[in-house]
Length: 364
Image (cartoon, rainbow, N blue to C red; front, top):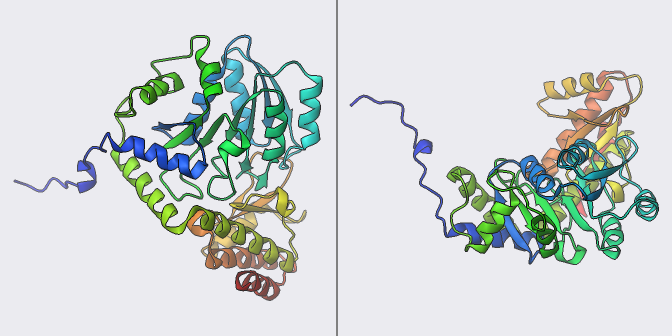
């Protein structure tokens, strides 16, 4: 028989149905959540849309915080389902101000749902999640938190914070596959979703996944992709072996070392540490220089930097220290490449001082 180029990846065995519940419980441990954990067979943006679709209906009132592209999309999805949505929009590329949220809650109509992104990979910022959730909790508001770019990089205690729906994807700080996501859903959130004919028979139906929970968490709806689930298991094995607290600390160290290096370089980071993501550090580009040109120069050195997105008119370059990149070697190469790109463009940068600052941060 001729060799047909068969690849063993095409013959991966089915993922054992009894292990879905174990996966869900392991994710619940990472989130510190005793709520129901449901698994979504798609990238996290689908899980976010599923949350919006499952909540939205005429008569629902939502306060939607926009600090990047995903917040804007979430408001659109809620409106499409008939919800009345009030958007509050942060200054370009910046976190939302807690005073803005408090004012919107005090002066606006009664709110049923509040939605926000915890950390924004688009601009490297961190929203004041505990303070916002405290405001919502005091008013009995159901909260939806996009924690895709914060889980594993920042402390996240769903139960302690009182998050009703937390959406995560394992592809960032958890170093897992991009084709799966998960949601933690509280009893209050289920009550709101199921009270008035939630959508069913759809990949966007959380009500269908509630049936999965209630039915013993065996086989998932549809045809699961086994490679993705085996990859998620492997990612959780690595997280548990390292220890979640150590994973978070590793990201925090990478972020602080990056900021120290940029400051020594003469290129201060975009926002203060308390308002910054631990996964991506953004730096404003000097007025006379083009972000794309700096990124191209860094690329010639073998270092991938990226431009901030959804932050116009802000001009930002992002230094990525997410997941396996949250190491001394990557932080050093990111900052040195950015400094070299600045220098090549005629802008002064003290690469030696930056290297010493990063080394000092990792030596403490």
